[in-house]
Length: 254
Length: 255
Image (cartoon, rainbow over all chains, first blue to last red; front, side):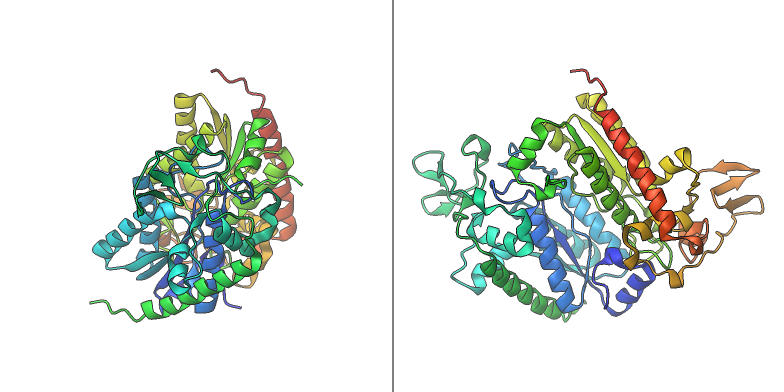
């Protein structure tokens, strides 16, 4: 069986791969709280698993996951680690540029964590401007609601994310500890509903969630999360990306 | 059974661990050529498994592995990843600062790649200067060379391949293992298994490897690697690190 993970290939095997394929998948995550019931590595583990499944189905090599990313607002929850965003940008660019040096021209970043998205967009732009590399990232909680209106994916460590985590590795999820977090409000009109909101719009509010609730998950409560839903979500997300990668390969470079 | 990897713990489980422990183990790897027969992730796989076993035996939590490091001298080989040492330094520093915020006062880096060694040393110095936390590192080939009968004078050769076989022999292909000598730079600046030498005195490595070999591994012959050798080496290294972890906990720290 052909190897999918670049970490498992020898350098001649990778060399062979690049001769026939200029695309690579890079999964990225973060280490951060996800409620009492989910592991700190939730985002990383989901991204890693999704990337592997995409790579296997699309026959595209998958790089080792970067398990550290950028996060804020929850830094006081034990185990949560952040990198400065511009350091993270440097790190991602250095990672990608190594592959570009070896002939990669297209990169799909499979991103498991919302806080990474801003930096990933900057990275894609830089890689294109500097090297003509065609890359972008996508996030399951943005992709899935657009493919299935019943999946609002409006939670952090809640119904949808926990389901995906169960599908990824149910042995490290403890559903007996899953709780509904109390709603958090800054003022009468500014409240937190998976993103700070004011008058039906999202606004950016720096905050310290740990000072407001000691559970960690937000949005859709997690108790009804189930592995069947997670497996279905994963399958839809993977299939979307397999098709996407096939289409990415057709993009012409001038 | 207690979880060992921090990525597997919930934040409350990690909090409980840190209530009775202030040591965090941090594995650091590299993705780089290791000859025809070894995977690009050799340093990564060895560091990852070693950190896990050390953490398990010493009851210390293990952070997610930093998978890439500084391997610029190997960029001539396809698949090698390299990040600048200052980027590595800053990433490791910020990871540690995060753990310090959560109560960590001692760090043990399990480093799988020589190109990261000096950078990690700098990180440890900065951590101590800035935060009075204790931080140190081990590299299996440096440890074993000093306290065992294994000279570990290779890159992707006899000793490293043996370690890789012990960690995961399914991704090593011994049928294509071969060893060639590195090309001497002059008649008198030559390579032996231990490195560059002039008149018998060691010179530091400074050249991109692809300019002196097309194969990638060098030093003690890869063809002589064995899983039995690897298991003996691995066990000695783990034992050493577990003892070290326990001793690190006894270091008095100033506040």
